[in-house]
Amino acid sequence: MNLEGKLEIVGVSDVGSKRDHNEDSIGSDTRTGIVILADGMGGYKAGEVASAIAVNIILEELRADPRALGAGEIDEETGYSRETLLLKAAAEKANETIYQTAQSQPQCRGMGTTLVAAVFYDNRLTIAHVGDSRLYRLRSEVLEQITVDHSLLQELIDKGFYTPEEAKESQNKNLVTRAVGIDVQVEVEVQEDMALAGDVYLLCSDGLTDLVNDEAIHLTLTKDSDNLQQAAETLVKMANDAGGKDNISIILVRVLKPFPVTTGWYTRLFDWF
Image (tube, rainbow, N blue to C red; front, side, top):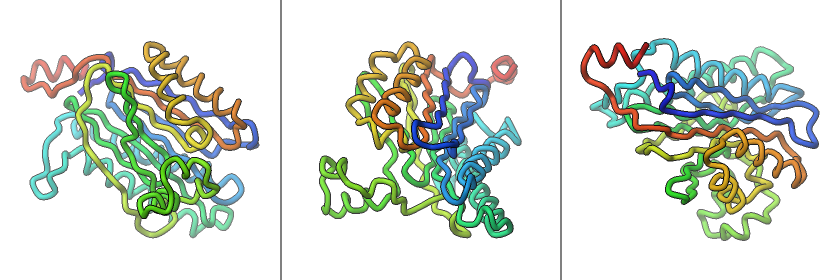
């Protein structure tokens, strides 16, 4: 399925005001409906190695067989779509590669990365995430955080030690409990959702959400929903104006029109080319 003309995708990655290099990586493919964002960590410049490996491997794996994406076929054993299983497997392969690289190259020892990725197909999307990079959805002017952080702070909120309001002032924001490449295996959280025309999706690293609250993000996306490039640049500027203490990465996706699976061979052929 060719999604050009059905999705608009904009990506921005900024070093921020305090760091001397960017350890975030982003990638996208409008044709196949893939978006990926990774926030690297560990070692001198090793974080950028980990995040780049994650983005590149997932893109390569999902592009390997273009016919594998877009059909939305359901796996009877798991109940997940084929796209979900492919995305999960690709993230697991990225984990294995990053871990092995860290073990074989001393300068990369301990490196890892957060991950948030999505694949759009058949009026749906599959989301995979590890760590505290997030995916939000703006629908009918309502902003909702779709992913739940894999972080110590989120665990403390879940256990009642913090309210969400108190958590905003916590000093433990950046302690993730799950990351890609740290261990031999990783638990990749996946979920599926409907995608509607007019939806705007935001994928971002914590360089944005640590400094710009959800209310300000909501206002910006609502105001500039017809200009994704402007919205992305505004969000980056807001984070830098608030201190820019980390790298700031953003991917915005707008659903321009429905993209259901087509059934006839002629329609499928026309859609692909």
